[in-house]
Image (cartoon, rainbow, N blue to C red; front, side, top):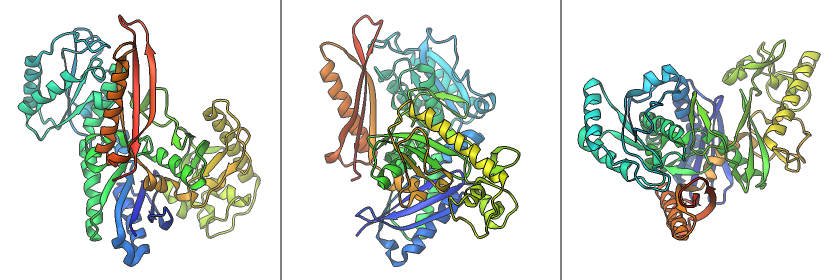
Length: 509
C-alpha cells in the first residue's frame, strides 16, 4: 500500500491529509499558517506523519498547494531582479515594459528593460528580423549596472511563432551564463502582449521563491527520513512536478481556490456545482464544470499587475470564521488567532464563528456563546453577503447545488436562494488539501492556426504539444488525454485563422 500527502497553505490555516491507494483519508491535520508560511507547512506535515506512526514510510508522494508566490508578490519580498527584453520595435515602443505596474513593485523587480527589433504577425510571419546585436548590448549594459537573476523574453505574437524568443534565450546564455534563469512568454501566457509580458516578468521574478519553498519542503521531508516524489498544485486544479514548477512558479498562483474546488468535487461526488470555501478571513466562491474549476474569461490582476494566464474564476468576499463583529461586519479578521481571541474559545472578540455557534449552526470551541441581537444581526448580514455572492458567481443559473467546504463552512445557512441545495460533504474542512492530493498532471498549449488548409494538422500539433507539456509536468505518457479543445475564429486577418487552445491531463506516473 502506498500513501500520498496533500498539503494546502491557506491564509489562516495550513491543512494536510494522507490518502491511501483507494483514495481513503487515513490522517488529517490543520495547523495555523505561520507568518513565514514555511513554519505552518512543516507543522502540518509533521502532524500527519506523527498520526501515521510506523506507516509514514509508506508515503511515496507529497503534493503541495502554496501561497508563497502570491505572498511574495503582494508583500514585495524575495523577488528576483529581472532583465526584460521585448521583441517588437518599432511597433510597440509607445508603451514600455511594466508601464502599468505599481511603482514599488516595478522598482523591486526591474533590472532594466529594452525593446528591440523583432516580433511576428498573428499568422507567424516576422514583422522584422531579430536585432541580435542590440540584445547582446542591452544584456552587457544591464550586467554592468548590477546583478541580474533572471531574464524575461516577450515577443509580439510569440504564441504563433516562438523562434525569436528561443534565439534570444541562446544569446542570454552566451552573455550571462547558464545559471541565469530565463522566462519565455510563449510558455507562460496567452495572446495579448502587455498582459503576457507581465506574467512572464512575474514568473522570472519568482524563481528564487520557488527554489526556497522547494528547499524547505525537501528539508522537512529529509528530517523525517522520507524519500518521495514531490509535486506542486497549479491554478487550474492540476499538478506539476517540482522541476516543472521551478520553471513556471507563477502557475502556482490561484492553486488554493482551485484545490478547494477539486476537493469539493471529489468529496461530494458532484462535478457541476457552485463551491463556497469558507476560511478564517474570506470566503472564495467558484464554479465546477465537469469536476474542474471554471476559468476566468477576463484578465486577472495579481498584486496590481494585469496578467492573462489561465486562472480559476473566483469571487472572494471578506467573510470568514474569524471575521470580527463590530458595529458592522468585518472586513477585519482575527485570522489564525481565532483560537485565542474568539468568544467560543474563551477570548473577548466577537466573530462570525461566535455568531454561528450562538445560532446553533456549529459546536466549535471550548466555551458557550450566549445568543444576542448583535450576533444575530451579523449572521443576517453574512447570509445576505452569501446570497449576493452566489448570484454574482452563478451568472443566472439557479439549478446547481452549493458545496460548502473549508474550516468555516458551518457559518453558511442550510438553504441559500439561487442554488438547488446546500451539500456539506464529510471532511469538508480539509477539502483544499484533498484537492491537492487527488489532482492530475496537466499541460496547455495555445497557438494560431489557419482556418482552411493546414488547420487539422495545426490542431494535431497543438494536441501533441499540450500532451508533451502534461508529461513534462509528471503525467503518465500512456494515459494522457485531451480534456479541453477550443477554437475561436479570428477576424480582420489577411487569411482566415483560428485561435486554438488545448489542455491535456492525465494521472501521475
